[in-house]
Length: 498
Image (cartoon, rainbow, N blue to C red):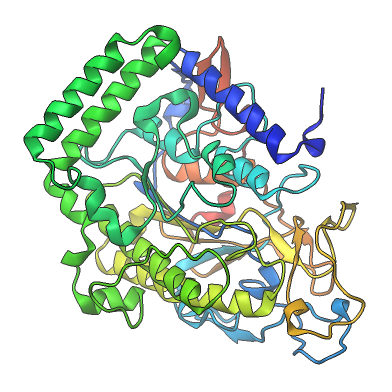
């Protein structure tokens, strides 16, 4: 059997597609409860994941090290951080320059500096993103559900009219879109628990209205017709009876939203301009953030600043009307955004500009509305980066980026390689401690984890625990248990909770 380390993107898609077909054929996934599963008291009602897709370098963001400014001819191993450190609202916690506003709200949050990504062999972003979002390393024999789908299935919606799992900011027709689809799904749990996808938050209102030119009555008729077609389709074409029924229920849920007052939460034009500008400085009414330019340039960077900022504002509005799980992405596209394979310093500066105002304002807005205590915000990335090391110091793998012996051009000044032995995760609200720092990393290269290592099973276990879900909860599929953390072994990190 081919090991995952040897798999190509094509192999990944083949195994993911096979798992999807398996999900379609699967029957009702029965929850396997125990006394332990039922005893947890939730400290949060909603989770908002702010996804830094592409690999956010910890030494350039939330775990700054020795700063070395650019100089022509410098050695590539001479710099650990390409930004100076700044103070935050917590005396013993420093951030990297460019995150000043987030630093001002650090007294409301918890910072993990020792998240360690899995050892998955030759690194593909989609593999690590799959593992982060499902808790399992691909490939799996069943379609593993996204963490948002697990929360939606286990807890149900807070508001029956609002989708329990909403995914904002990620397109699936660019870059590795097919690979991202493999985990942005409810998997075997059924379509009704899958994501409500909003690629462009400024167009969110359009997703909760009938198509242009179609009356509500005609839309309802078409919806009923399609449901009859699906109900009559043979088993092999639409999946098992359970999967068909789940898909039909997802239609009912979508139709319920169209006629609900909660649909107004999707309409950002109803937000005061002053409020929007706190998330997107300089925003002007009528602007659209759906540029097709997917390469470098000022226009693209400006578009992305607006999209993520509006995504965070939309997340706040959806939290207010009872969304259960929301993910807002800076969007993963190969060689763009946090995927800093060249021009690392300038690209990270742009990414910090993209996230600093929206993240801090989201925290402040939820706090002002009395929602932060019951809303868990999680900012994370699939792994970190280092200028010299690919993988881990003791498990080096093939370099995917060439670094010259001497840095003569600023495009080589920054963190280009994938580093998996330490990374930052930022948590706010939802029962987490305030002003708390978890874990220690080395001050000199390799800037690896020294104490209090956090792995994905334990991070997920802690998120589930905050939501009142045991890491040992399982769903029975194909006559065997599928645990919400790998093999039910995830351990809650008690130090994170206040």
